[in-house]
Image (cartoon, rainbow, N blue to C red; front, side, top):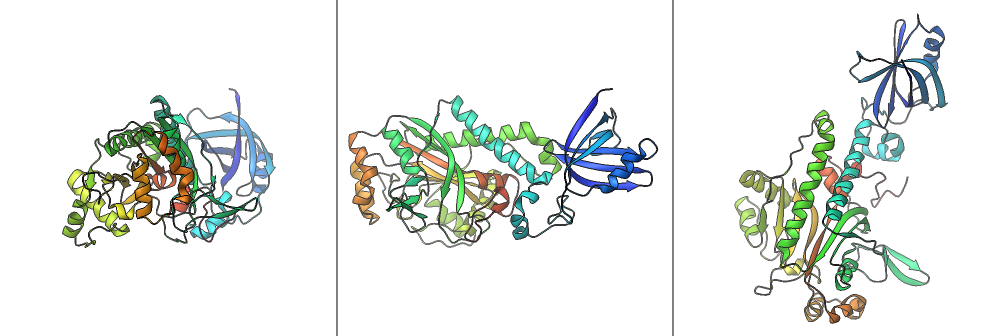
Length: 422
């Protein structure tokens, strides 16, 4: 038999009579080291020196038919301590004793050692991997737009301001406007995966000050339904990849991952008001809905269409940014689209306004200084194709896929109004 080597952290130690069991954890999972006193008394005694979360290296013979439920089992001939852990460990990595979320975030690198937490970020990595694969296959070009901008991208005061060599600059709220400029440039089909920031003093379970998105933009569309179709296919392929790769682990953690049925339901304003009214929720005509309404709409779609995913289209223009396209024949409504999953908004998007005169008109309607957005709008004078896109929140998709209550658990090192470290 060949000698195998395993490296990792001491996850658990049990000494039962004359047999010691040391469970080692690494990114591949758990491995049990079985040490019998009768076969190696020195190594058996050495196990009593081990502490939880010590980093060790063990060499020995792997059991062909292990009896342990863990999976792999090794009879070690040698164990080396590579790094000792102080005791007690501030977070119980095994999950037997649950710490409160603020404590876990304070000790985040230790908290992330748990196999369940590692699974969260395997899923998140695969979301990005599957999205990239689908978009590249369909001839989308990956781009990188500025994170530091000289003008506010969406209006409002929810921006982080920077001193840029004595000038005012901001962290972007969304790579939206620069993606549109690449449509003007003739790139036609692009995607970007990266961070955005919002200086919003929100302490909800779904908001962050720094978040990441899969942003997509494409040209020569007929209307916003071309954008809806693309996003539907992208999400479908992400779910399919996750199912193929991690179905057993989803089952292990009691998560029912279903590949969504196509097409996803599409609800439109003003019908939204009637749907909510029938469910006992009165929303003023022409206004946006709230988070409670998102849950109610999910319940409605689940009952009517048996779907957890659905689009909402044709929002009132007065609640949307200046750059969205209005419906020409009924300009009260915008070709603005949100994708919701289990009652939470995953993305916003739709068709953008590509006609220079219309952009100027709409900016004035929103009381936006034309001078402040001239860097953006002036390029539309020279020919822009009909275009649209969306930006899917990576953390929100992860959160909803895994039934995580607080979005901070779907971020390695979350940033909110109170947390800047670690």
